[in-house]
Amino acid sequence: MLKKIINRAQATLDIQDAQAHCDGPCGIYDPASARIAAEAVRSMTNKIMGLATPDASDSAAVARFHNTLSRFVAIKEEEAEVAKRQLLILWTDYFKPPHLEKYPELHTVFWEAAKLCSACKVEVSPTHADELVAAIEKIHGIFWATKGREVDWVLAGG
Image (cartoon, rainbow, N blue to C red):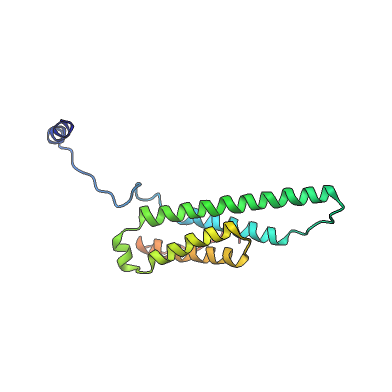
């Protein structure tokens, strides 16, 4: 019944089917949000590594240390999850079979980047944080190449 109504409305109103390349409207996808999140992961990782453990007899300093450490860890975890979510959106919603044909390494690049997000959540590794930023840089290059554009890789944190 509903299908008949829709078909009649289409015929009467001359409605045409719309086709979309992506799940969302084109122009909303950009690896920049994943890059910013990955930079935050790297920044928090470096800050954690740079924290000096206070003298255990100074309870106020120990409390400040634990407060700062827990805040840095929480931010690192949250931003790693943001990076992972943004990468998965690009991977599953933007990239399509023609992109995979042109970039056969695409699935591996995304899979490794997502795994790096997880690694950055469960450990404090400057190496993995740097690798995550580098993986997103590679995705940035592929993404913009699919649009026929050259967009500079610019890090917000310097």
